[in-house]
Image: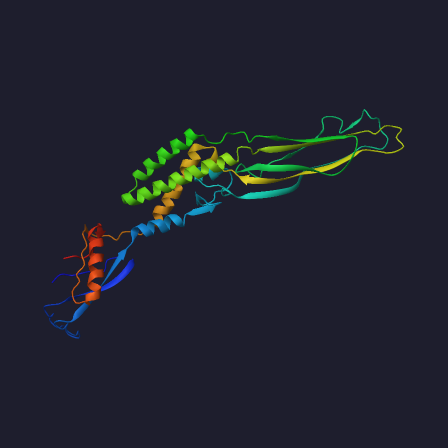
Length: 317
């Protein structure tokens, strides 16, 4: 007698039947099987490509129609090493009334006097950590009375974003990494296609931040209005900086950090794939006896699909 089994492959569950030609000997306390009784066997076929697609889809975040990899956030200075970051691409933060300066001159002082005396008052706007840049800013004057001098200056972040050559190198490294994985070829194809999309989108996002700043400096001073001034007794200046921060994690300017992040993403997807049960690997077949005529065509279709793949079969005699 041939034993059939439950194939652990989930999509469509189909109950097929085989007939036993020999009755088993009865055992004490156990009812014997009857000759000719149809014994149901459940066959399940998994659409593994859909499982891969689902695993990938659950590991993606979309920003303005573009896809980016989801990786667990890191914290602080170790974010780059983890391939993570304290923020995700596309995240922004606003800041207001930052780097405020409040100055007033004493009453009736010489016009040659400045306050502070030298240099001007300086206040700096800096992002909370290295994962952020200042995308835009504005200096606002709350109130001011002349004579005064005020201004603002922006400075770069101190690094350069990755170049096209860097991205090409990362793509080559990632394709080699995926090629070394112990997964079916069609999984590798899907992973590489998605990685290419990520790298292209990350490059575009990085370019959009090329005009951003690392810090902004706010400066101001006020001058005396004159010892004899019947109109105004003193000068003053009150102002601050508003702006927007944008997420710019290390992997936008560090090639190794980008490679680490993408490898982390690939590994997270692979871990979501179903585990193949232990057992000898062979070609699984389906027996379609004892079922209605309208089901035989479907059963044959499933049998052909199963025969076209390698699957794990347990307890096959």
